[in-house]
Image (cartoon, rainbow, N blue to C red; front, side, top):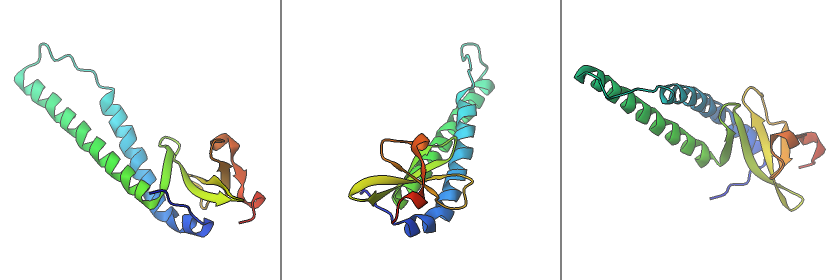
Length: 131
């Protein structure tokens, strides 16, 4: 279900969002590293094959954890737009149209918004809209 945030609600969610985004970023880097490993399984010993199985198991466990945390973030009502940059959007409404409050990991508070189709490059200071 789509959730619309007032600015104060989105600000209150930031500590949990911050924690989740940091975990997601860390998991994403680890998953990418595991995914980059190329193994030729043709001439492996049984012990080496067991190691490959362990790496695959770890990859899938981390992927499951990633999506579980992503679901937790979505249950708050926000959208992770870019895991590598830590970009998160919160739906809101202004003058009868949908907008996003936009937050980036490292920012202490939500200070920007943008039109739904504008994206990060279209960010504008919140002061420009009177909520």
